[in-house]
Image 1: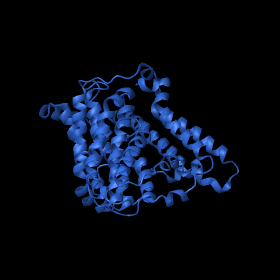
Image 2: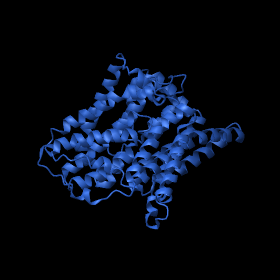
Image 3: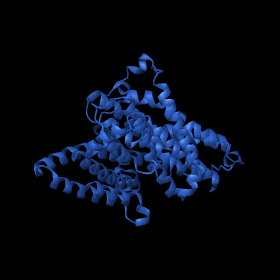
Amino acid sequence: MVLVFALGYAGIIFEESLAFNKSGVGLLMAVCLWVIRSIGAPSTDVAVQELSQSTAEVSEIVFFLLGAMTIVEIVDSHQGFKLVTDNISTRNPKTLLWVIGFVTFFLSSVLDNLTSTIVMVSLLRKLVPPSEYRKLLGAVVVIAANAGGAWTPIGDVTTTMLWIHGQITTLKIMQGLFVPSVVSLMVPLALMSLTSEANGSSQTSSSLLSSEQMAPRGQLVFAVGLGALVFVPVFKSLTGLPPFMGMLLGLGILWILTDAIHYGESGRQRLKVPQALSRIDTQGILFFLGILLSVGSLEAAGILRQLANYLDANIPNADLIASIIGVASAIIDNVPLVAATMGMYDLTSFPQDSDFWQLVAFCAGTGGSMLIIGSAAGVAFMGMEKVDFFWYFRKVSGFALAGYVAGIITYLAGQNIPLSLPTSLADIPFITGS
């Protein structure tokens, strides 16, 4: 099974060279691994039971992603994000660097790092002409999107995985990782501000931005869509049901709303949910499905537990293990890394909201910024702006590494300094819900 997983993983890593789509490789790998598991299991019934349990866990994440991506696509099709982009008016290159960074950071904390990257890179195309400076701003978007997604349960798919499966809770992850995430962004921003690209003459141009008009009732769709995303943790806290149910509730409300406001408008079908569903990254969702099912097979076979025992015996420091996971996520996709970690260590080894799980969330979320292929945000940036691996490695990787290390140091140092919240804030169900 390990050999099949390694071969499948190699196919995913080198998909560009092999011309094989990673989603197809992931699905093929998952099926092959479960076939092998069914042969090696004590009985077929045992393997089927294990597969059913794994599928139930994976489907929660798949449905969550499907709902979230559809909601964001609906808002984007209504040009709802113009409410954010229209307020970016600075023409100073250094100031714009920081503005883009923090807008992306907070946008990613509510949406997800991939969607935030797509939105912000699209914005940069309208703000800045093609140049080294625009590439640098795009790199800032990648770093900020990954940092912003690490400190909320819905900002990054790996953090969402940990949240859905109970390793972290909303309040604790926001308390524990907000400051380290900010530091992991501010350090690269400060270093990038010293580069020649960030100290050149103004290159911004807002003429293209004004040419795009928001769709009718776009502000309403933006408000409802954003509210639906933010309401998910509240729903989980109030009902105790899995987060994907809250996401599907929000999607259902937005679906009915868009059908109502565009009733009888045959020329606006692209603004409705059926058209949005045709535009979302379905192959990305299938990739997650294949990877998570593959990792589930390794967990069912006990391979991940053996790996955990090996790491415990040879690397007794849990913080170091989490840090290594982050570095590895710059080379290997962080989704299977976190999925494997969840299979290696259960809640009896490290309780809910322990330092280990929080550090895993931070490291897996931000470590991918060190290489352009290390995160979905980086891959999206590479495809949209035609940035090559070695440009990013020369110009950005060092800055991202500095931010990564600074964030870890900040987190470890802050464990002895409790972060208190106002009583009124701590009483909100969304904040205190597990």
